Image (tube, rainbow, N blue to C red; front, top):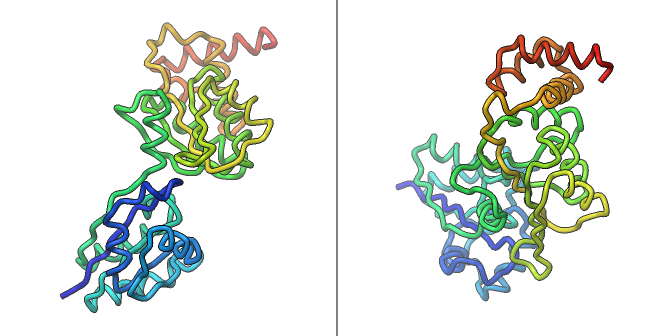
Amino acid sequence: MTGTLVLAGTPIGDVQDAPPRLAEELAGADVVAAEDTRRLKRLTQALGVQPSGRVVSYFEGNESARTPELVEALLEGSRVLLVTDAGMPSVSDPGYRLVAAAVEKDIRVTAVPGPSAVLTALALSGLPVDRFCFEGFLPRKAGERLSRLKDVAGERRTLVYFEAPHRLDDTLAAMAEVFGPERRAAVCRELTKTYEEVKRGGLGELAAWAAEGVRGEITVVVEGAPDKGAEEIDAAELVRRVRIREEAGERRKEAIAAVAAEAGLPKREVFDAVVAAKNAGA
């Protein structure tokens, strides 16, 4: 019989949030694959448990090479436990390759549910949570970041992002540029930790706040695009959206077509707004 792959959620801050089954799985697994074995050691010490199986590292740098080895152990009947530094494996963390490989071999995959920065931030944000999209980390390069943001400029579901603290101000500024400075958002910092903070406001306001410097683990929740009728989007806003797309590398014709589709307007109306702005020197 083949073994079982267990994806285990780990605390995103407070170790007391660890699910009781996590300690059981850590103690009983034949193989524990950890994103950082040093952090795993601190976690097991805090939980008062000692892994009885083999402990191996499984992180971005060796994920491709180590996956076949773990699959082989699963095919031989081992119970393999996968943990990351915080939260659920494969959610912007190592794990997807191993899950996909296990599924392909018809190996059982199960999970120990645990804390989630995505869901915790959503719940604390004060923004709609009935429908949402998780976008992970944005690209580091400014042009690629703007391109990714404009792809979801018309998304009406709440958006959730992870971001590094040293890039937060640039990211919020780009969001304010693409989504508009008044779009509501929440920056959730150090969730469940001693210095937990949730900063809420418009994207423009939050960008100015983040420019002073922010530390810690960051999750950003952004309100979805407003469900506006065509008559509610003025010409200046249409021109602004076209310019953002042009600055990101799109040709004007393509930018006008995209903005028209996004706003639910005829292309001619957007074109006329752009021409009028050009003639007015705006």
